[in-house]
Length: 163
Image (cartoon, rainbow, N blue to C red; front, top):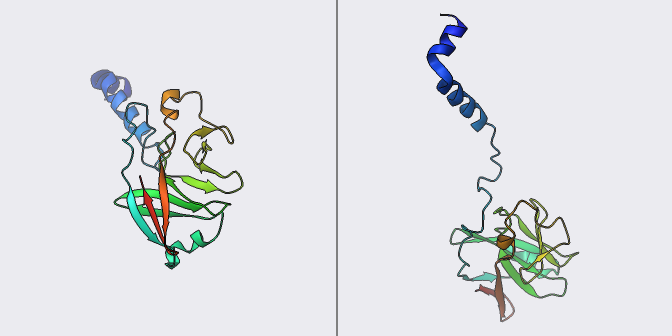
C-alpha cells in the first residue's frame, strides 16, 4: 500500500489523532496548575496556625524584610516581616494566574508573583509596580486581589496567622 492509498483509507481522523497527540507533548509542566478564570477562583481560605519564631526553620522572620514559605494543611502561604518590623501573611497562590509564586519584596513593600510580575499591596490589592495583569485576563478576577491574613505576636516567640 502506498502513502496515497493509506491516507485515503485512514482518512482525516488518523491525521487529527496523530496531530493532537504530537501537540499534547509540547505543554509546559513547570507549574501544573492552569491559569484560572473568574468563575473558578477558590473560596477565601480559612486559616489558623502558629509559627515558633525560635525554630531555625522560621529564623528569617527575625530580620526585617525577610520572608518564609509555610505549608499547612496542604496549603501554601508566605509569611514575612516587613521593613518596618510588622508580621504579614498571604497565600502563595497568585489570584492572577494561579501560580504558587507570591513573595514579599521589601524594596517595594509589596507582594509580588515572581512567575509573571503581578504586584499586590500588603492588603492584597493589585498594583502596577511591576507588569500588572495582562489584557487577556478577565479584569473582574484580578479585582479579587490576593488573599492576605491577620497576624498576632503571642509573647515574644509565637506568631499566629489567621483569617
